[in-house]
Image 1 (cartoon, rainbow, N blue to C red):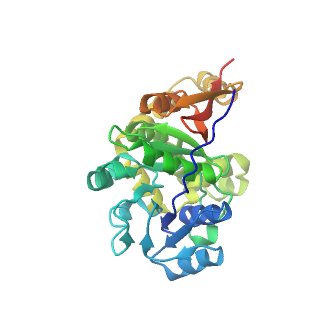
Image 2 (cartoon, helix red, strand yellow; image 1 turned 120 degrees about the vertical axis):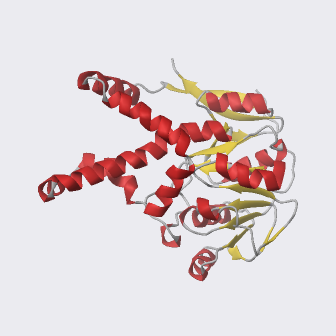
Length: 306
């Protein structure tokens, strides 16, 4: 099938507010991809670290403005900055509904919520990694009021750094990440605390299973607390489902968990999706992702269940 190129429109510049691990990594990756990038951080050390990677630092931002700041700072992230009133604003926050409520009311269809599913327990500009987004799933929220051309421009930013774009609504995103990200942080905390109560011998014998099961709770406690409290409703519901699973007979539980973990899709089936909200959301709900933007549609995949 013949592919048609995207119309030759120059890619808009990108402004990144917050140059810690995620923001600094995004800015560096975009510079490496040839995009025009301006970054800003209240921390002079973060600005200096970004500048060494080729990022221009300034308060004047236009094009696509990315908020890479902690959730509690999101609402005030643009204060004191000179932002083009027509700029598209997106974010990298791990919870979407509260940010949509704050920024969506002020920005309307110019706001596009986003959340790249990557990052590590490390933080700060010293954790910058331009390859951080390669192969990562990047949830990109498509609400009834989202302006589709702006959504596509933000999607192009994610694709430019090697991510795969998963269309979703804010509510769908928050329900999903409660199960696969927020509850795991709480379980990691509980596992680490329980092992600590078990005493020095238990901690001395801890190996791979304990390390893998507790890795994420090495993150900044303030970040984790803001994340789970910001998504309290879906996280509480997801945690209740985990507790129900733990109440099952252990052989059943082990078998059920093993089946889910080992019985993933056989592969990926390529698809083309029109640039239309319902079709894009259907792709995300099917477990698929966008991997390429073309003229009148996007290319991507859905899981091939055989």
